[in-house]
Each structure stands twice: as C-alpha cells, then as structure tokens.
Length: 477
Image 1 (tube, rainbow, N blue to C red):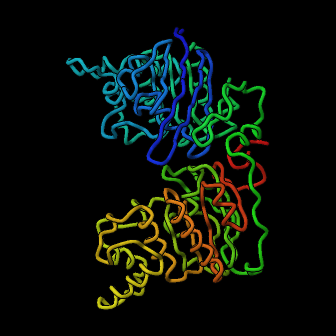
Image 2 (spheres, rainbow, N blue to C red):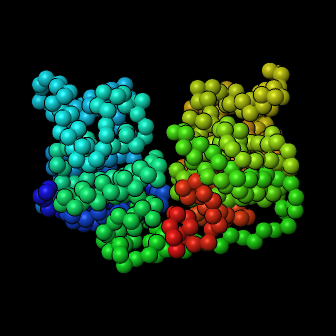
C-alpha cells in the first residue's frame, strides 16, 4: 500500500493575457479515491493539471501535497513530492524503445551511468502485476496507442508516487482499452493513492469516480460531490449550463438540394473509426450546427466532407458527388495558411482551377482584402505577420469569395476577438442567405445556437439531437 496524505489546491488563479483560465480554484483530493475533475473545452482543466504538476506557475494560490506547500512552477519539486502525471498528449520519444523511454524518465539529475535495464526494471515488473504485456525493446513509434499510454502510466507509478494526475487519458483509446484503464485507476486508488482523473466523458467518470468536481470557465461549480449521489444530466448541466434553444428553421432553406450524408463512417489517424455511421442533411439556405467536446470525431467528419479523408457510406450534394466544397479548417496555421507566403499567394491557393493572370493578382487581392476587412499593409505582406484574427479573415476571404455551394467550417472563430468573431459569423450567414449549405462545427455553445438553424452534438463519433446538456458530453440523462 502507498502511504501519504492528500493533495489540496488553495485559491489557484491563472490568467493568460485577457483570458482568465482559472479563478480562485480550491479543491481537495483524498487518498484511496478516484476524484474526477469535469469540464468542457476551455474550462481550465489542463491548466489546472499543469499548475499541480509544476509546469505552470499560478498568479495566486498554492498546491499542498501531504501537508507541504509545493514551490510554484517547479516540475522537479512536484515530481520529488510524488506527483506523477499522465498528460493528454504522449511525451514519449518515438525513436526510443519502451524501456529506454521509461529509463529516460527515471534518470535523476545526479551524474551516473545510464543503465536502461536497471532503470526500467521496476516499471516492467509493475506491468506484470497489472496484467500488462509489454515489449521493452519495441520502438515507441511502432506501438499502438494503448501500449504507448501504458508506458506513460508506468513512468508515473513505478516509484510508488502517492499522487497521480490523469489528463483526459481515455481520449485516444478504444472501448476495450478504456475499460482496462478504468480498472487500473480503481486499483491505483485502492492502493491508497490520490487519483485525479481530468475528463469530460460522463459515462466513464460515473463508472470509476468516487467523487466529482466540476469546472466551468475557470471556476468551480461543484467540489467533491459523491459520484453515487448525482446523475449524468445533473453533472452535464453543471458543466455547460442550461442549453439555449435553437432558432426555428426559417423560409431560407429549400425543401430539396444540399448535402446528404448516410451511414458515414470515417477512420481516425489510428485507423479506428472516429465517426460511426452518422447520417444527416444540410439543405441549401441552412446552417447546420454540430457541437460537442473536441476529439469526438468532428474534425474527421469535416475532413471527410471536404474530400481530404476517406470514408465509408454515402455523401452526396444535390443528388450527385460533392464537388464544390469550401473548407475552413480548425488549425489556421497548420492547415489553413502557408505562413511564409504573402497574402496574395495565400488567397490564390483557393483558386487553383481559375488562376488569374499575374498582372490581375494585385488588384484582385486588394479587392478581397477590402471586402473581407483584412488588416494588412498590402498583398505582398507575409501571412505570418498578420494577427490571428486577420489570418482567419484571410482564410474566410479565400474560402467564400468564390461563392461555393457548400461550406464546412470548424471552430472558425476560436481565438478571435469579439469584432473578428462577429465578422466571421456574418460571412457564414451571408453564404447561407445566398443559397449555400453551411456545416458549422464549433465547441462554442453560445455561438453555435446563435448562428446555426439546427444543432446536433457529436460524442464518441455519433451524432445526436441537442436535447439536453448530457447529450453534449455523451452522458445518459
């Protein structure tokens, strides 16, 4: 059994510029319990994990482990105090073996011989007691997702750390792997550890947690609730509040034509289905809103509609193949822009089938810059030099100027200020009003219900009507 006291957060606040990520958060975690911290996107969960792990220094407040206050922003001190963290994104070195990754993590700052076998041995023995089979010499890059996560967990528990933090650990896992992980969390708590599970999936939380706390927009909505005494719908309402009502569909939408998806199944990057037999339609003159917590298949669905990800099932527009589709991706830097190229060239990237003559490019680009209110010194300025809001306007200009029949937009206003957000939303409405079918995928509930004519939610790759707060986060009312 692991012995130790509890873990406590006292008055934690953290601001990033104008964004208040955490506001006076106080929570207490007891040994021998799985304590879930719930919250939707932007609730402050990952920031809270980073503060506890010493990776981020709070603006105010402190972390107390076993009665001792930890130095702020000191990950080494947090590790020495016995805090083990399994992060949402893997921290393995792909070219190293499983054993080498474990040994690298367990190295101390004092000089000494890097003995992989000796350093990895405790973790490999621990794997056997947990019923895990692990190939110590296999390269991390060749391992399946579940095996990679097992290595991450072993790194954090092989020294009997009394405090374990799991940040969205089920996100990349298959259902069987999720079940196995929940078994491990329960076992670790039963050994007397503090187990903090940061999550948003209600079914998983209620299957394993002893206590539940809820964050919304950086503030504590509920602290230390007994999981047995609360329902999924009650938790979901604490997470997201009462859902607004979508506007009734107006006369703009035609009774025929538009996008029709039937039994659409789309693989994720791992090959496992990210979208599971989804059917829906988006008529011309209509904005269909799809919400949900990120990572539930929304991006894969958008990429399938846009023609950049394979799928099974039927996808048609006006009864034929989907051809004229305009795509606003979620990541404007990685997928939306060629940052080192200038504004004009980025605008041209959307017109490869109707490339203007060179002497026509500058006046054409200036016209779009003015029409879409892109603040820039001119067409020759590099896209990387624009503000985030103006980079997004550049993508919107390129996407909508050619008046496509179908628009797919994924979190198109994320990170924008109020004025830029309003501009992008107005452009989507304008596309709808001239007869395009618009699919708006957004994690911003207020925006979704304000802009969309009809709203559904995605959870675990499935689509469901926006009937309750629990439907947003995949819970059972």
